Length: 140
Image 1 (tube, one colour):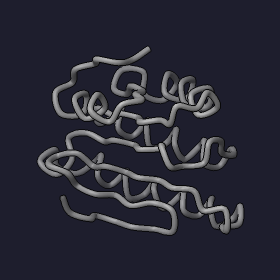
Image 2: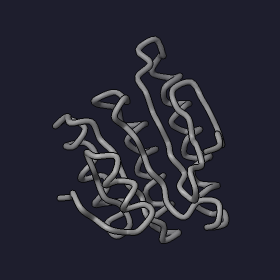
Image 3: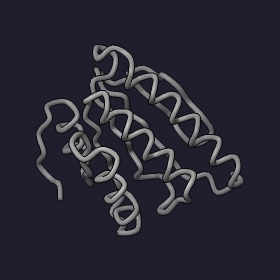
Image 4: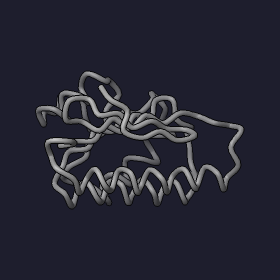
C-alpha cells in the first residue's frame, strides 16, 4: 500500500491495482474549503482513471467516515469522478456507512454517472471483491 495523495479530508492510497479513496468528516472546514477539497479529488482521481491500468484498474470510494450528507458541489464532484471512471471502463466500488441518507444521495448519482461500472456496498470485503474480480456479492 502506498499513499498517492492526501488532502484536508481525504487520502488516496494505491493498494495492489486499486485506488482507494478514504474520506472523513471535518466539521471545522468551511463550505468553501470542503468544495475546494472536492475539486482536488476530481483532479487526482481523473488522472488515475486516465492513467495506466497497471497503476489503478479500479477505484474504491470509502465514505464510511465521511459526512452522512453533502451539498451540490460535492455531489457534482462525485458525479464527475464516477463518470470519468465509467468512461475509462474501470470498476468503482462505493463503500457506504449503514446510513439511509448516504444511500439516498449516492444511489441515483451512481445510476446516472456510472451505471455500468459502479456498485454500492456496505461491507469492505464485498467492495474489494468487486474492485479486484468484478464480482458482486452484496448489491442492490
